[in-house]
Length: 117
Image (cartoon, rainbow, N blue to C red):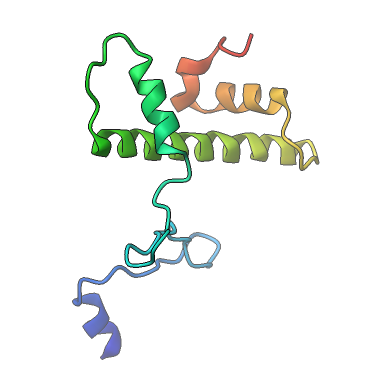
C-alpha cells in the first residue's frame, strides 16, 4: 500500500540499476543553505570565456550558469570514460592515451578526434 502511495505522490524515487544497486542521483546543492554552490566551475571564469568570443555581445546570468553546468557534465562524462580506459590497463591514473581511447571509443566524442594531436 505504501508503495502505491509513493508511486502516485510525484516524488522522484531511486531506481535500481542492472547490478541491483540504487542509481546515484545527481547531487543538488540545497538552495536554502547560505554559501551553497550550484556550480562547481567559477561562473566569472565561464563568463570571461564567453565574452572572449567576438560574436557574443551579451550573455545573461542564466545562460552562463547553463553553460557552466554543461561544461561540468561534459568533463565528468569524458573523465569517467577515460577512467574506464585506464582501469582496463590496470591503472588508476588517467593519461593522455586514456582520453584518446575514450574519444575513439565513444561516438559522442567524435568531434574531438584529432584535437589532442
